[in-house]
Length: 191
Image: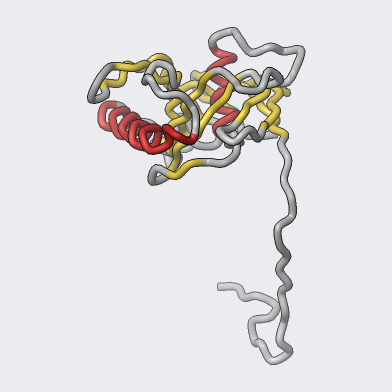
């Protein structure tokens, strides 16, 4: 189960260089600006990644320039971590396709776990999240996460969902820790 996920701001008007778009700011472990890719005129595909990265950062900075983004119960959790562009899926088994632009305009190869929880919070707040089946979130490269609402709660004055996110991962390496008999800190230390 992920952290309580909620919408902090719904439908914010964000002025970009060429147009004004609507963005929802939601928390799913980090704050994201969630924007319809069709509203910015960019399809979610590899050919448009340079523009998606640029516009994603423009949206993040525009929102942070006009709004204080801070968790109502944990003030150290602040600022927008990334912008998630959503659009129609390319796979008919998915509900939405997305690309997550995060940190310094990096691109997440997965549908983004915390981002999926934030998107689910937005869809739930709109009354569109189906309760009888998982939400299937497709990434730019076709990988999928499945999300389910396993409970409900509140975060301050915000209604929140308790999401569960499922995906696939593969082991790509192993690490072995060795302890030298002469290491005076082999058992750790206490200050």
